[in-house]
Image (tube, rainbow, N blue to C red; front, side):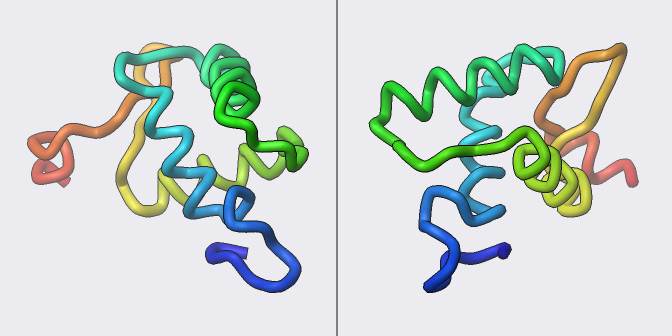
Length: 87
C-alpha cells in the first residue's frame, strides 16, 4: 500500500502519490484544486492508472502523518523546515 507491490502499480503507491501531490504544492492550493492539478499532471505525464479520490485522501493522510503538509486558512501547503522544527 505504501510501496509498490505486485498488486499496486508504482505510480499508485501511497508514497508515490504523496510525492506527486507535493509536486503540485509549489504554492498553497485548496484540496480540490490540488486534486484537479494532480489529475491533470498525471494525465500529461502519461499515467494511465485510475486514481480515486479516496486514494488521494489516503496519500494526504500519509503526508500529514509525516509532517510534510498542513492545512492553513483552507489551503493545503508544504510545511517548511522552520514550521517542522517548531513542533
